[in-house]
Image (tube, rainbow, N blue to C red; front, top):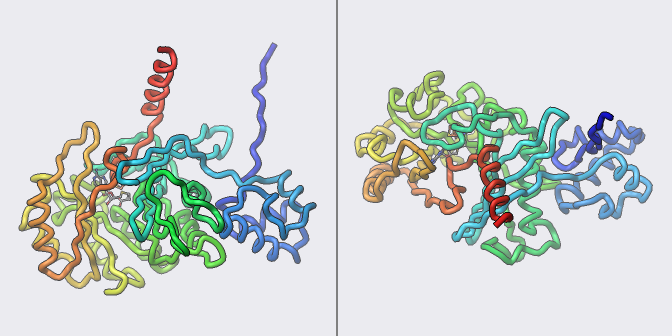
Length: 393
Ligand code: SAH
Ligand code: SF4
């Protein structure tokens, strides 16, 4: 006897789709062309403005159409398989992405929420893992890599807003810190600083930003959406002219020799070219500065001479500098600079006229800080083994 696996084909999810994709989905259902625009607007409003979880909530859509929609689609989102809340209120979610086909067992990514009193920042992933191998970054050691789809990127924001009660008429969770109050958004800012190199997946990243910034839906200003890149020079201009979010550059070194080692992509695109692309970034101005991220590695890139060189290099670039204390991970080959060293570095940069906030590490206790994200299956297997042992005891 042969056992055949049941293949319950999953219905496509409309949550995360662009307007054009929703339109095509409705056309495929046989809806008349003259209705498509209006129906797309209705669905858009329910999915992205109200955060509807099912078609039955969509009361201005006729009952018959709701039944048809239910039969053909759903509003499935990435699933939170694990939530960790740090003592400082930072949340890290391990998300399982719906399978994209029979070959795909469902990848996993991490997404981090960082609340402050007046804002909430969601750090989203653009890839599962990363093909680049920056030596100080945990994500770079992960083997499995694929690009996320547009819907999977938008899905991270939708999941976060669902979990945080960040849709009209919803309650904030009572555990952990989440900014609240009349008109206060739980998620007010997005940074593409999770797993992956966003500019290696630039089409989907730009499409996702367009959905996130759409005024009839999620409605986040592009000024509050920041794309961080390790320096994929040819895509920087494109990101600026076609989409226009805020830009952050992971610089980390002021000499090519050292940057080649820390950020191997530098062998392809040198510091000089990278900074030229920044000078040319469409929309950059003193009011819309480019952020330069600089991870503080003890004895590696943290001398006063390097701080002075950094200031010299950034002449003519509307810049702010973000000093990031190195966040350690198991087996990391670096240590974080001493506090006095970071302060000295920061003073030099500040005295040259740049804002130079030192980024307070958030969520270190749950390995949610920059560069600590990694969700390889081995780790999960190890966790499952432990859970099984616990259960057996
Ligand atoms: N791939 C993109 C975006 C993700 S990384 C990029 O490299 O810009 C987000 C930021 O975290 C980058 O500036 C990265 O250099 C930094 N980072 C990576 N590992 C880190 C670590 N262990 N400690 C502190 N910052 C780290
Ligand atoms: Fe990739 Fe960014 Fe990590 Fe470098 S720092 S390995 S580009 S995620």
